[in-house]
Image 1 (cartoon, rainbow, N blue to C red):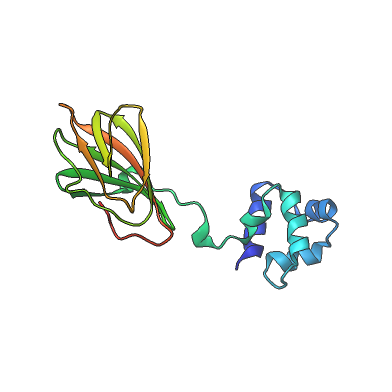
Image 2 (cartoon, one colour; image 1 turned 135 degrees about the vertical axis):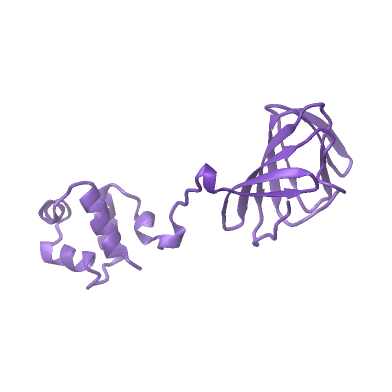
Length: 179
């Protein structure tokens, strides 16, 4: 872990000197320097003191680089298609995936299907038929629905215009591409 480098970066970004940090935390300048150079491993209590002084959550100091926030720029998003649907993959983190799916008039996800996880949908445009088991609803712009994805489900654009749906899928295990 590069905790020291992270502490130094935060301190420098906030334009705080080692002397100011020493005065504010009660830690010696040499000790702070050793922490920032990764020459010593501070205790959780010491890290908590530093985090409080820097006004950052302790957990942030403990995150590995790959655990930090990821930004995917619009022009860098991955797109795919499935069953005449246009899919724009927005972001994924662990078992959570988000996407925008564009359904041309009459298009559907295909036959009802099931998979592990939970799904939430927000209709951004159009008119959708959402079915799961014996439940069947027509949902329109601004409406949302969610379900346990292990029960077979089906989504179809029943309007005369394209439908656009924001979909969030969560699973405890990493999912292969569903769409």
